[in-house]
Length: 499
Ligand code: NAD
Image (cartoon, rainbow, N blue to C red; front, side, top):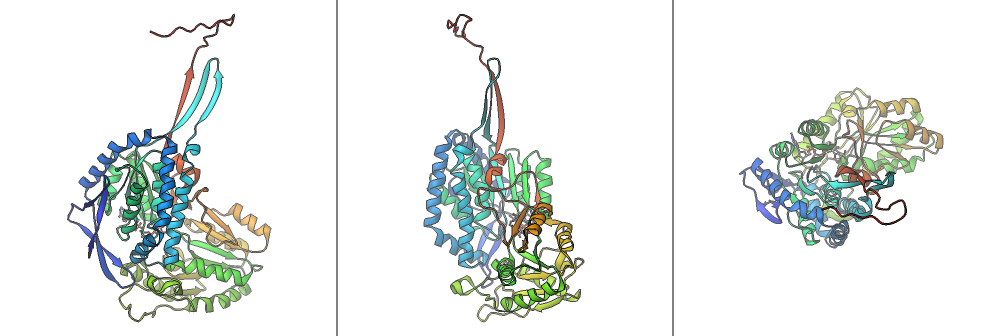
């Protein structure tokens, strides 16, 4: 079994707290490693190292910083297979999904190559007599990020790439359930030319997170994970005077209008609902067909598709649609929620409860489930399941479907499938959700736009990546400068150096 490390000051450092978390191979159920859980003293040490390294990095001109990002992109592509394999081994997702995870992070690194342009300030020539005014964007100092298990490559890169491109040092506290890839990402950054101490990885749990939130030497904290922890971190981080952005859970609705192309809508729902075993914050977990006839057609199109989904380990190659969920506890939680749906009277159209994979009996596999006739009072509707379970709520009208999405406490993503431009436009304008798809089931914005939900899916003002990230990781300083004119009335130069 592998004993994992932290990555501090450019070195792999063994955990010193004596506390560890088991890291599983979700396909076999075996413990394959142990992640050290950092103590407060280990966080203190990482912050000291970061503080010592950061001023020189901040003083490195933005073009040189961007060149490190350029080289990093090359190295990520070079090591794509290795990263994807390590990611699938700990997370369980298929290799194509794991490559997508790395790729979407890599695209944010590509965006950060634009740092010299993105960091340019504003300038007003002649704001008054002899007065010019300009603003500059300066790094915050040391930033920290706390990330979830479900995108061990993409989400850390969403945070550390812009933070570092802006001249900050960054301390990453990844999920203790998938720590290998974050460590590899930090190593690769140094191979790309990043000085030691600018990107560090400290593994840990609540103790490490609390130490980060309370540390005076950390200026900002980014978080992605479940909503209760997002709320906790936002409150505590703000109370300690930090700049904080937290992104939480989701319950994403997809509305299917009567005029939608039903075959395309069903294909989209299967990919968006069951891909990565539903362990995506942008997964569609609620289908809302408008009208009984639409609902009947949708269920008829979905049922055979869901029944034929192939579940298996990532080692089976392209033949698998999705893999296991991350832990035995996650599996139990999903199956309990499915049972609650059955008990509450929802119709289980596809029942994956007895799913078993020969040779992988101890793996955390969950079969695909499809519910019909779910109602908003049920736990399977209200709670985030984060598993391969799609709930169908039948709506009588477009307004009723819109109201469902609007009344849910989560507001990460949503989609509408229709051929009616009016309906699509109205939906995009009125829905109180941060990311909207029109005939696109998973509307994840590309790196140069920004990513973020509304309502209980996000806390804080600025989104991730895009230009928002450069705002989040910098402070604006505005300078007003008066240089009295040295030109006399007659035009003769009258410069007197100060002594
Ligand atoms: P999680 O909230 O359990 O853990 C996220 C991070 O918080 C981890 O690093 C973990 O170590 C830490 N943490 C856990 N408990 C803590 C505590 N009590 N105090 C302090 N820190 C704690 O989330 P997860 O299970 O790793 O990830 C899945 C969740 O993340 C889902 O809810 C999903 O919707 C959400 N998510 C959201 C987005 C988004 O952008 N909105 C993206 C991906 C995942």
